[in-house]
Amino acid sequence: MGTPDFAVPTLEAIAKSSHEVATVVTRSDAPRGRGRRLAAPEVKIAAESLGIPVLQPTKLRAPEFVESLREVGADLFVVVAFTILPKVLLALPRLGSINLHPSLLPKYRGAAPINWAIINGERGTGITTFLLSGRVDAGDVLIQERVDIGDEETAGELYERLKVQGAGTILKTLDGLAEGRLEGKPQSDEGATPAPRLAKETGRIDWTQSAEQIQNLVRGTNPFPGAFTMWGGQPLKIHRVSLTSGSVAPGSVSIADDRDGIVVGTGEGSVRLEELQPQGKKRMDGPSFVRGYRVDAGITFG
Image (cartoon, rainbow, N blue to C red; front, side):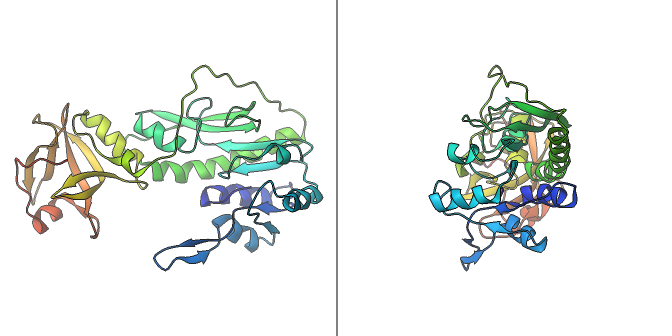
């Protein structure tokens, strides 16, 4: 059970293993892009290429869907980047349901664990497989693997790494359960932290924060929803920044030239805007932005 590309490596890995994928459950096709044309979820595309049947229920509790899933007779449900399963579905598989979560639970329970780990300045995170229960991301832990976070790694880059590593962790979990040598360990609520879904406003830069906090925000919201500041009455997306020396008022531009680009003061230290994007325009580096737009030292962002 899964929808986005994060679940595809897991599906492909199971399909190539000794375990049988009886069917795939994913969301309905949905409008995408400027033309709002119906597009299939990435998991559906992958499943069809592997010749695996696909179910796309509009409602998980619908009696006809529950019955069709019961008829599949799966021993285990594997859930990756899907949605919360109702109790009626959790009761179906003989061995229960397992989930792949990109954090070291109980830290970062919720929809955006990769983003919040980076935003909060974590040096490492991980992969957890666990048994689904009635509480979100709170079931018994099966396997955990720690993963270091690079100093400049973005949420998108970490996402790509974890989706591949997660597939391997799922296979270890399936093998352990099939061989009867893996049992869940109760997950403590002590140290639990939330990882709620990101909103556009999450990416708004508060220049009174430290340079390191701002860099973490930019990394943690790249590529979605994206960090931004206000400039000339319009949002200016900030895709990458680096830490640099200097101390001026928060949001104030201390350097703006076509060689060194743009340096902005923060609550502690300064950042260089390495990659930015005016509204409706393409991404560009700092020096290119200065050459194309009027940006003078002394102006204030935000």
